[in-house]
Image (cartoon, rainbow, N blue to C red; front, side):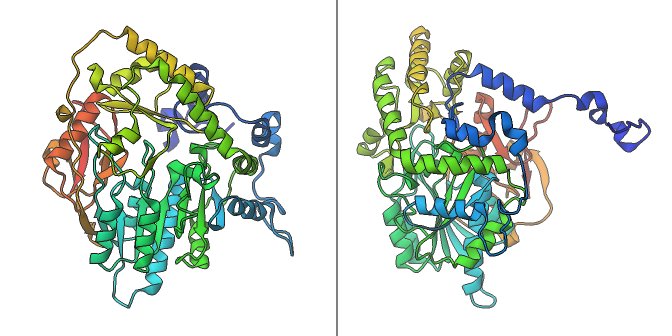
Length: 510
């Protein structure tokens, strides 16, 4: 143990003491949570269980023995031979129709999204004329990692707003609107995120065909639909339909360890192979976990062989369990589509949205009651809460429905509240040159930032998107949504991510 010198600078920090350093807060909290939640409705998709082969690959009792970093023949090639990792990634590409190349990233889908965004930008920079700045058409519901990379690279972005569903969640992009935008401007790349967190899918074929008709590469973030790359049970995946590059969050719906992601390059991609490879390499960790990669090797095999069976078990469990709930509590997305309340071309049945407003309760209140029943919920909102299940969820789904049904039965009856009483996000089309998104900033309360330019992206979960960002004005409606979400128990991100003593959220303002 290091000597602890109270006279040294580190001695001024009580957390640098030997006593403090004996704490293991993450391990302790993880153990408590793992013991408490016996029904899990949040990624990773394993739900706390792994097939024997995957669990063995993660390590079991031999974990420490097998936890190695840079080993010749494993991640580093031997003379004249491919490394085991290269071979594994070749098998990953082979398991996904439409993939020419694929690579694992242990930096999560955020790292994969940032790397793929860079590949799209680098492709454009090789093609523009001297002095010309490329412009990218990006749907407003992309992950914050994509938005941050676009800002960091200082490019021009034309944001295309996605509609909002009456329940208050972001919808998918309307393919016709995307098509119309492509006809009006000179774009060097398109970025689409689909499906949404709640499983609503955009019309991938129409979007991809529209981009390619204008000679524009399209990046598709399919993080919430990774299983589609391994099965045609939900139709052809964006990768198979010709997306130039895709982002896959492997752990969200298949038996991959948490934080496992992948990037894939499509056949006939407009993104050059060497550009894509360089972008992936730049965002990879140089010391990826060997145990996680071993587990990924097994999980890829399982996905290739069993993804369809996993989904069939999930859907069967949902159908068997509906009887435990009031008839109109689980949102029927087919009905929402027929009623014209969503632009979704399809929906993933194992991503479950439970409306609560008709009971007179917020999603936050129902989520808290479910927590008392030892059921983890993924996200809550004023009008609903949401749970998402992946490959390991078939056993948990009946328990979720039973316990939710019991909670609803015990609730005192209240008057429903109308959806028009719920604060609305205001999403707007906007064109932003992020090379100009610099300058001095103030840190002010949200209420004082209304109608002033933001210096950072701000948003809330749900819907988990950047509702406004650098150089854009923070509207009165969006400020109200942020404050109402915080007061209701939702989570916010962006801005300063701190509160004053009075609990007022602070944001940066240009």
